[in-house]
Length: 162
Image 1 (cartoon, rainbow, N blue to C red):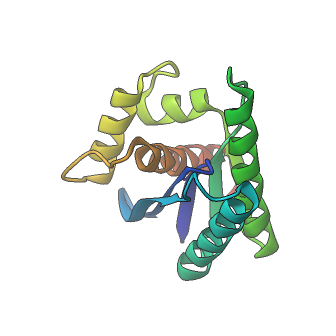
Image 2: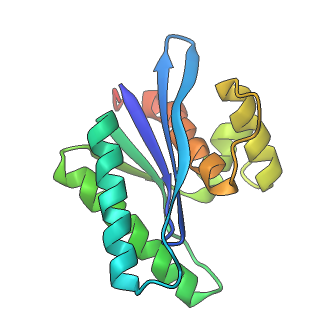
């Protein structure tokens, strides 16, 4: 069963499809969905929804793990992150896929063992855990992989069976 991690955003929405097979965890797909900043917001949201739907259809994950939208200093950024997050959660829920949210500190703690780790530490641990030749780029892709890995670390503890 696949877990898809999502680092929500309208300009760049990171995604990572991961699978645990025994003691090994592998990346099935890692990337970023983008929308042109010059397009009107409704068009960008519709494009993002179409792209997310295609990912969910292609990989049929059992769980969508997403980074919880917390306080952001820039209200405009927080709004667009929230809009992208809502689209991802709704698309998953519409298909009967479980949706689980994790805080940034939970993600960092699960991947690095330290809830205040910096982005470079998270990226290097994602590379190590998934056995990748390079750190996933851009950072949004690595962040999405970290969210998926966080779910794999937390799910057995919660007895979720996911």
